[in-house]
Every structure is written in C-alpha cells, then in structure tokens.
Figure 1 (cartoon, one colour):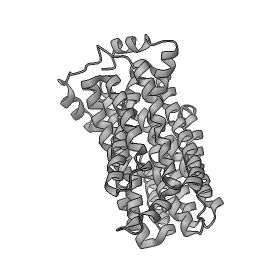
Figure 2 (figure 1 turned 90 degrees about the vertical axis):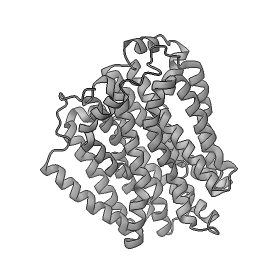
Figure 3 (figure 1 turned 135 degrees about the vertical axis):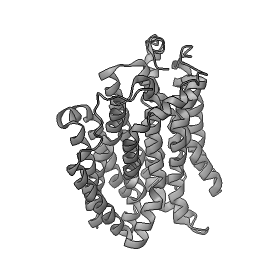
Length: 407
C-alpha cells in the first residue's frame, strides 16, 4: 500500500475533486481536536446535570475521556482496515460513525448510551486520521508531505479554538446539549469522501502476508512510543482539567472559560504552523526540549493561577508544546521507518497518544484528590522538571535518522 501505483491513482484526482480530497486529507486531526475541545466549557454543566446519580463529576470526566479509548483502538485497527477494505470505504464509514456518535448527546440521557456513543465517535475519528495520513503519504512526497502534516495540526488548533469558543456561547444560550451539534461537521466531509476518494485497485486490499513482520519490525522504536504514552495526556489538560481549575477559582461563566481554554488552541495553531521552520532551526533534540519546557512552564503557571488571565497564560504555554507534539513525533517516526512501515508506525503513534489520553484521568484525579486542583498541576510540573533535566543529560531517541527500521 502507498506505492507508486496508489500514488498515480490518487494524483489522477484533479479539479474540484482534488480540493475535496485535500479536505478529506486534512480532516483527521481537526476532527480529533473537536472530540475534546467541544465539551470542555460545559463539563461542569454536564457534571451538574448528572449530579443526582453516582459520581456526576466522574461521569462528566469519563464522557470527556471515553473517546480516547476509541481513539486508542481506532488508529491501529484503522491501519489494518485500510489494507482490507481500502481507504474509500473506510473514510465513508468513519465519517458516518463520527457524525452519528458525536451528535448523540443532543438526545441521549442515559449515561451508558452517552459513553458508547462517545467511544464510537473516538474510534471513527482515529480511523479518519489514520486514513487521512495514509492518503497524504500515498499522494505526496518529501516536503509536500511535511507541509500537509503540519497543516493538519494547525487546522486542528483552529478547530479546537473555534469549537471551544462556539461551544461556550451556544451552551450559555441553549444548555449543555447544544454543543454536541458541532460534531455534525462530519456530514459534509462524508459527502466529500463519497465524491473524491477513489477506489484504489492497487491499494493492497486483502494482502495480509507481511502484517506480522511489519509490526515486529517496529519493536526498536519502543522508546519513542513509551515517551508518547508518558507525555501525550498533557495535550488534553487544558480541556479536561482547566475548567475545574477555573471553577475552583470562582470563574463560572462558560464564555470566559471557553476563552481561557481557547488560548491553548491559539498557541497550538501558531506552533504547529511554524513546525517545519522551527525544526530546521533548532533540530530534533532542541524541538523535543522545547516541547517538554513548554509543558513544564504551563503546568507551573497553572499551579499558581488565581485569575482568568494567569490561567490563560498557562494554557497558552501548554499549547506551544501541543502544537509541536504530533508533527514532531510523526516526523520522527517517518525518518526512522521505510515507506512500507510508515502507515503502521503512524497508526501506532496515534494509538499511543490516545492510550495516554485515556489513562490521564487515572493519574490526574488522584493528584487532585491528594494535592487539590492547583497542587495537582504543581506535581505535574515537578515531574516535568525532572524529565527536562534528564533529557539535557542524555540526548533522547539516539537512533540515527539514517538507521531506518526495515520490514
């Protein structure tokens, strides 16, 4: 999959269909950004709605984070499905699942139904992201691929910022259910996939002969994946934890909350868009240090925040790391794998990101319980300080770019 034949077939998509295909290619990370940012301003409202049931606050947290389980499974399974059903059928089904699962909160009131629908939405979103990244890799080479990967994450920041602002405004006017309508943005993208994604006769559908060797060949990359699992949960901290930080500080207006959280998305837009230039200036090790340092500074500021303005600064600092995170690790994995392995390598990267995001409440909630909302951020800052010191002592990911992993 992803060889010259598939590249030629995709390049034959021209005119208005090419623009629709590009929209499909760029849609994965933005839709995944909507997964969490859309509901961030209304988490306390959801917790209050379910307060008469067991663990209203915990239920709100799981409604927010359950998609991470779907995302975690959808990315590697999505790569497997592309080999068997092709990118066209997969994108069509995934867009439909995202629209239906995401919008279920407009009517569902049963906690189990909400959790299942959020899982379906997450699984579909990860499948879309995997297919979109595969399509970029199959159609484009070199710099063109890097630019579109950076564009994906810049658009993800725009989507996150827009969704969190719109969500706060419509929630103030129409209640906590209204923001779920934002997920219906997948419906026009479904139409774009129907019109623009070709049936790739040469895509390798049904070819399973190399699946096991390819997966085992990725084993030397385990330090990269372990680092992703350890850090990726930080990307969703502004969306999942900052609303409760603001509430603890007496800031209850959903519009103000949405603007504060949107500062993280704004920073991620700027840093993701500048990733190609930034990486060329400071290099691989320098980029990773900046990612860790931005999370360290952001969590440290949030641990001391008592106002919306200071909280917004902390979110902005964390957003710098978030904007660089996915492009950095995607580029890192691409540089260390042969073309035949890159689809699975990227799928596993998304899976590691979503595993981290799914596990994050299991780490953050005990920190909050023991140290308070502000103290939990202080504990995270202390751990990041230790990590940053360690990577200055020893250069991370020492496998040279020329030493590529082969199938």
